[in-house]
Amino acid sequence: MYIDMHSHSVASDDSRATVEQYLKWINAQRKKGFQIDGIVLTEHRQFDAESDYSDLAKQYDVLVFKGSELDTRYGHVLVYGVTEQLTKAIPFNDVTMDTHELLAEAARTGAFGVPAHPGRSGIGLVEWQAKGIEFPDLKVVERVNAGNRPEEQEKADKVAEELGYLGIGGSDAHFTSGIAKGMTQFPDGIRDEKDLVGALHEGNFHGVLIEETVQ
Image 1: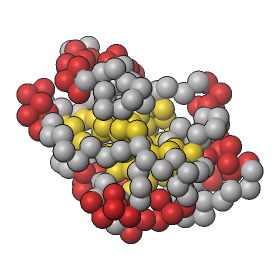
Image 2 (image 1 turned 120 degrees about the horizontal axis):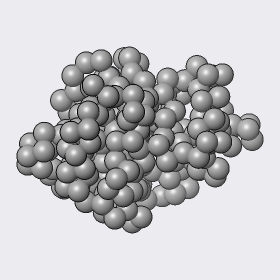
Image 3 (image 1 turned 180 degrees about the vertical axis):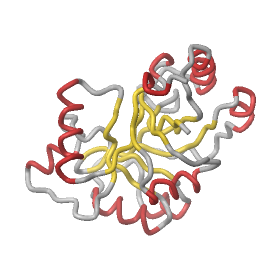
Image 4 (image 1 turned 90 degrees about the horizontal axis):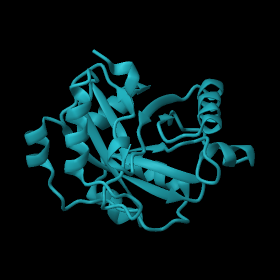
């Protein structure tokens, strides 16, 4: 399965794409031979617990999961399998929250945190690691981000190789044609966010660009 693990709809303050626009674009890309099975909506500084995309997902035959992208003291973190317990424990709109606390609380409540675009200046963990901030329990980062500049991608690849991080992939889409340009390949079927978290724990996945999914 190929799932875009990082995308933003109009629910995020800097995106102009609706979920339906994304799904229509995905079906157009499928006709070109690309395999795209699902997306995760990771809206900025929030978790959209109310929206139900099940009808759209069925209509377009695309899995639609929900997560979050949170601003933290040491960079942005993608969170999957968000629970009500986590939203009560962590103020999602606090841009100064401690990164270590978020990662630990996510794990404690059944969610899974992954530092986003680690090579990006100011909001990626590589910059903070260079300043001596350590993440001893970290195992997974967003290695493939289709919005990365070449030098940002190079830093992400380097830190993953040097520290042995597993890598997911995502598009970081903020506009319709950006969706699914980066994805994560999973060998087994994923039906919901619980399966997604389980697959991340198992560690059998890797990030890809859409060109690598041609059937």
